[in-house]
Image (cartoon, rainbow, N blue to C red):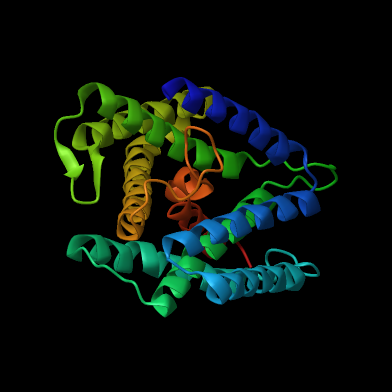
Length: 283
């Protein structure tokens, strides 16, 4: 199982990096739409939507995503920043206020309307952030994008996730949230914190800007907050799967389950990164 998991991860990483660096923006947007719609299909399963409700939810989601893409087509990122900030604000409300309280209270939400709204708040801002954060890395006059900002944020999440997984398997004893995800441990969280701290330090050394080291403590603390967000995203999907009575969100990826099983930590981090960037971006 572990071997299959690693092989799948390597193949996915190669395909993803190729798309991230080589696809022109229309191709990248099309890929993001596919990701959002696959996530929507898996969400309908987790929300126990079926029949006409599942089909209607899928098509309404596609219409919403298509409307955003169509509106953005003739505007620059600065011109549609206000609309995107509103979308990301919904995501921030979800991850910083609603979900922590949800997990703490152990809510079981089975009504179709709140589950539909939550699904949109999880998936649409994530897809939008994948587009915006890549566009921010665009170099004018060049054919392709250089999405180092998006990649750096995703690498931070992947490093934390991998470190938590392997540290937890090796040293895990104290359960983080046994009623939600028995496999997650505090030792795994500690491993994630140490790994991202080392990653931030290595990045500062490679960049070679001495002034960065003045802000190193602040950067490290920010990376720890990012790990916390990633853990919340991971735990939330685990809680939804437990509520639905399933082990994985789907069977798309051998050894990993569904797409949502792979991007759960990104759904809680990418939109907030895009929100922070857009807020400080010059108008």
